[in-house]
Image (cartoon, rainbow, N blue to C red):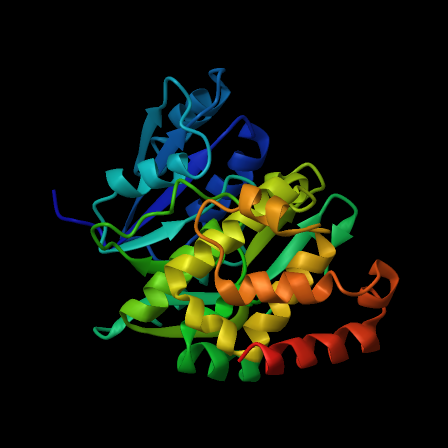
Length: 306
């Protein structure tokens, strides 16, 4: 059997109704050189039954994980099973926006390209949310230094990406919050990228999603940021964008002192981050949370810490 150009990889969990909408959007694609991998963590049979219904219409390969792999290993499992030259991860509550979405993404690929992404439209239960597309300024920033993506995920959800099927390029199992940014940066460092500002993908949005529950969890967000910083290189703290990001991270998650920071961190804490935190502790919380004062103090700290 010839290898397909694209492997559409779907890590599924329970949401058979939403998955049906995704499969319908795959069915209407005018680009047909793909296989479809469903890696299912569900405890029940609903996703399998749905896939059986679509197997006469789509080239679905269904795999049930027992025990469940969890996120992001379920994503990785689908990628490992893929035979395509390109990987199109699609979460089960997302969908293609139009019949030509997959074709337009593939048309962006090339011999020197390792990573492709597009704009997207978020869809919530109460209606459509504002569309998203990367700005020209941020395109320049990540072309110059892909690591700056750590500061702001201007690409978006994994469902808006298409990347080469490269050995060893998997999501880091140690992460949940920064897991997509980490992989994006590695691909951006591995080769060039292209993007379409067009909203080619619909992203499901609801308050029960994993990312919404993690966002307020200091014990997840702070350690993962420190882990990513170590992976990318602590010289990033010399860049004011990253320094300001870490300043806000320490402030917003109310890291009290070095003892707490060291307890949270899975890696050695950089000296510059220690100094940043000690400098913050010199000032009351109300002052740190007042925008103009916080910005001025951050800049002073950055200059003293260089």
